[in-house]
Image (cartoon, rainbow, N blue to C red):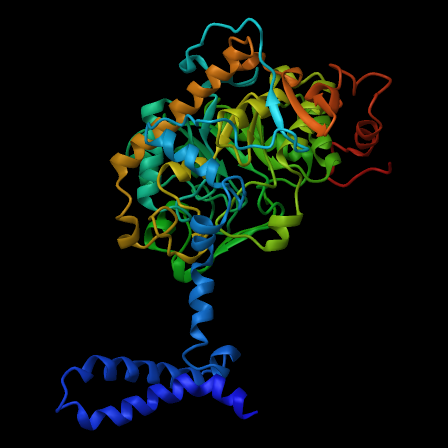
Length: 537
């Protein structure tokens, strides 16, 4: 008992006793001042620890107990820079971040002495190369025409673009740098559901305006969709496409709230919400409640925007719900111009741990299902597919193209390009690099002109690397890569082509008599055009 007390309170008692004992001697020995002052400050901290009621460790170990919280606070940085291996993904490995940093700075990303990857580990993936490599293609030609038969203003998009990140989550300087980089590189910048801020407009980069369930930037006073306000915003020549956000990978099916004390005047004006009230993103849309109503909303947005491409982004959940949307397309004849498939590995400023870890379908499975369903319903050639979710390298892009995507988006990759160090403090407003904060002093550290050039460099160098990979595989254009070009190790003695691993439906297979895949057949029977609820299987 006595030893326990001694271990718990000895340092605190020493600080108090030293402070009291040294006070009479301060006038005689000036060198005592720093030590007495330090001991006095620590004594006050210890008294505060004893009086506070929130932390038991600090009450039992005054002064010393604070070390626990100090170490816990810097644990991510200590692990990231001193302890983790190059291939440990938490959520991005050191090797992945270094690749982005090098390409953003226009530095060489070549590595000597061979790969650090274990090529005999289960799950290892690679592209098979050709004995007759193709001539190197111009990465500037890697573009995708987006706009179906019902669109009058199609858009030629780059193969690699900035995924959805809102002003409010990101700082004003981060938005400026991303958009200026997009302008320099001729690729698009997705606004995120926080609407179009003045900082999106400063440099004139192409925008994809994302509409979430809060309808920010085009909402009525009751929070519902306002067609007139939408039409005014959508008429901007800078807005190239409209994207309805049904869900996002990191927290599918979860709404959001920006507390009123964080709603600045800038954010209120951008989103069209009142000051002094919580800014709420509901978990579901109020403009539609069935697959058919979703498509009618898409048609309405296309008309209001003057014929610009309109589509939706989602993370796959219940398979029959997406198939219900496809059945509604067939029934109404209304088609989205594009669909962006987000994976559960996608990022966000903050989300409940259970949602981040255990909700939603990973990107590749979701993308393959969407691609197959569109092929099986004879709609794939009319609708473009984008993919987003932990994409930072040329191989990441090639991998999603091989299983059905037409283009790829990246959010955290471009965050790294403008200086993000993965401190995982996005939700605290204390981002150390000024990327994910509204603190004016912190975001001042992000120099827009420098970071915009890095955004441009990262985009250009990544597509250049993709062109080199495709040439090695004997391909002239990204549209030529498919599942037979990618390979995965299944075991120590077996590798398989992606084409061997996955079921690929034949064109129109869902519309004919027999469907080969039992899963697809069952989900197709359950899907309803008039409701997201399943029919009896």
